[in-house]
Length: 174
Image (tube, rainbow, N blue to C red; front, top):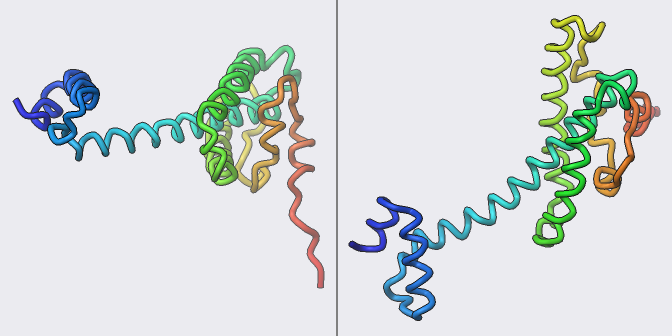
């Protein structure tokens, strides 16, 4: 069976066969097209993991700021998620230092996703009578209000008022 057919029938067997061929120096027998595709996918998955963790971290920080009156009482589950992401993100960046290039863009994308999730969650909580008014997109800072160091620092949280104060549009001048 050719390597290409093996790739289509049994991915795990293909990975083992490809590794064996590479170890033996039989580069001409390697299914190069699929190997290149899989290597590229590995890189995308690391970037995707970074973005996903940042989305979840910011989502839960926003929940704590916007949906709790007393974070120590109301947001314990959200706080545990924040703590876990704050443990995992530095390790991910340490193991993949090139992910730091373009980090600002990833943070902004993740923030937009987190904002959308907050709006959805607040609507759900409003319908359940858990909050008096849902949060809208207009209520949120347009740009990410955290610096990357603040996102990763243990035990740092901001209230809604603090977040909104951090990212104010510049005053209009004539």
